[in-house]
Image 1: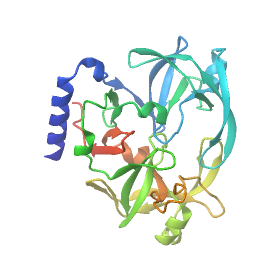
Image 2 (image 1 turned 120 degrees about the vertical axis):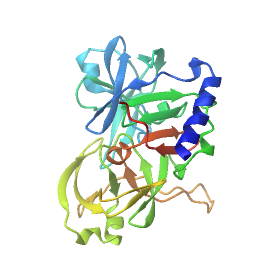
Image 3 (image 1 turned 90 degrees about the vertical axis):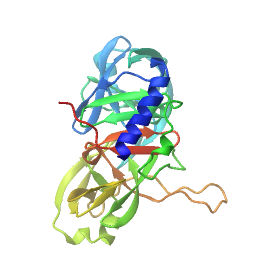
Image 4 (image 1 turned 45 degrees about the horizontal axis):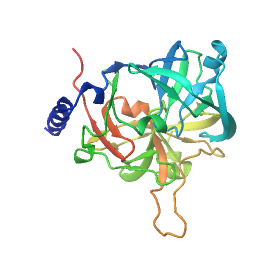
Amino acid sequence: MMMQKFLLSLFISLSFYSHANVSPWVDFELQNGHIKFPVTVEGKKGFAILDSGAQSNGINKHFINKHNLSLSTGERVWVKGVYSEEQRPTYNEVAVTLFGKESKMSYLLESSLGHHSNALLFGANFFRDFITQIDYPNNKIRLINKKVAKLHEFENVETQRHKGTGLPIVRLEVSGRAIWMLLDTGNAGGIIVKRSLAKSLGWLELESESHQSFGANSAGQMHSALADSVKFGPFELNNIQITYPAEGQKIHLLEQYQSGRSRIRGKRVQGIVGTSLLQHFLLTLDYERGHLHVDLPQTAD
């Protein structure tokens, strides 16, 4: 019933506004857990990867090299990945066409996005201007003007913007414990947590699998176990894979934030929730204000 009320209210709101306020649904590919949809960059066709856990937009260095692009360079910045950090250049005034619109994008961080067909990475700077709807089961995405839908009235997952970074964090219950996690559409895994949390929940004593996990800058050794219960908003999932660092390994998560001398602290982020869990749902995300609604969409016949 809640889903019908939400979708009906959203439909009425969207009908009231012009088509300029709502993009058409665009098909995407879910490849290795990453959302990819078509774009054109400097006249060359490629794909954009959607990553709600990235603080910056990026451009693939392999795409630049493949097409011999001569781009206007900006400042160099330090980038912290899950396992390490490094310095990279940025590019300005890059011609981009997406969702049928042409624009110039600046402060695109040089990134390593795999195959040269992957042109762009869209992170926080992309999400902030819109409400984003991601229909994972039907592989569709669209953008909505924030004036169209009052998403806070329908939020069913406790969501905030991290006080230090502005990235979206959500509250889940894992094996009965409430945990704040980074919502990361760019992470192909299910749930990644700190080793200390895995220890406190008794997962280190369980039989686990060992494997390599790759971050933005490097790789790390990880272990996996099964959580008996994960609650995500109104939904409960069972036997969900949880990944945590091997002994001696560390992962960089969002640090707890405290402003100046204030005693008011931000939420302690202890994990990352990625595509393996999100792929079952229709997500409607107001990134800028920190609101999220999840539901099970109607699948195409």
